[in-house]
Length: 86
Ligand SMILES: [Zn+2]
Image (cartoon, rainbow, N blue to C red; front, side):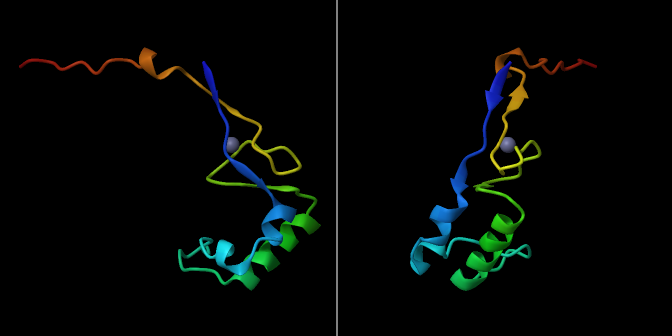
């Protein structure tokens, strides 16, 4: 087994970033979010008690918002696909 951990950023550090650094965030529909929208979102996360924003889809977070890690079976032990000859 190995543990995978999502990358997370400190929300306060993100809020302090200059506008041009915040332009890679997208809305839920995939369009680009403006820096002020991004900061509003980050502030709302802070009000919920979160300190970190995890990048990617993470279903195992600590109350602070950090990735708590995901156990995964080692990839080289994957069941081999068997081909049946007809
Ligand atoms: Zn995670």
